[in-house]
Amino acid sequence: MSQNIEQFASHVYHDRNFNCDTAKILPGEYYHTHHDMMIVTVLGSCVSACIRDRVSGIGGMNHFMLPDGGNDDSPISSSARYGTYAMEILINEILKSGAKRENLESKVFGGGAVLRGFNAINVGERNAAFVRSYLRTEGIRVVAEDLNDIWPRKVHYFPRSGKVLVKKLKSTDAATEMKERDYAGKLAKKPVGGEIDLF
Image (cartoon, rainbow, N blue to C red; front, side, top):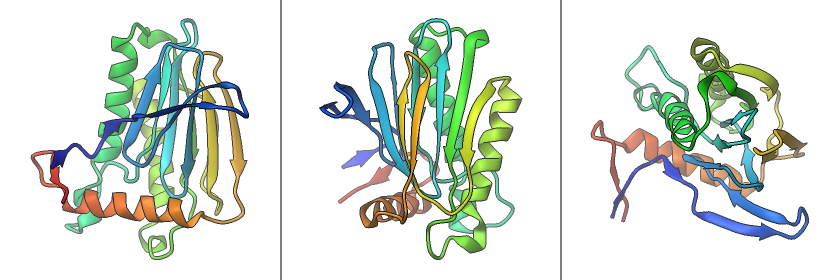
């Protein structure tokens, strides 16, 4: 089976605590909506950008593992273009849904130094620097951020209002760490053609 690494999140459910429809996004996924609902994710070294049209309330969130760039031939740096793709696809899909570029604002989260073995390449710090630089270049104002540090985070985003709730977690959930590691492995193996074979 072949599929793109980056994909529209398909896990939508009704959250009883917040009493609203919710989309849960995993590493490599994104979600956008014009409905009054919540988007939720858990971040370790990954970064999520929450982007919305502050007038219409159309908005969404992505979740990416690696920034753009890299100066060597390692699998990490050769896969690092996916931060750019994650940002481009989210912004383009929001604009296609009716948002206006001049009304876009962003909130960015994640980039914690939480994955053992990833500290040598500073993936969390690189993600944080990348997302700030990307949004500055695109002229999209960052109105809030919670980046770097050592903590994983759970992020609840309400695109219609722009409200975000962030909970810093005491330690990385084993399932979250495994999802980030699996996603990193898929990125490292993904060929230039843009697809991977899963079996």
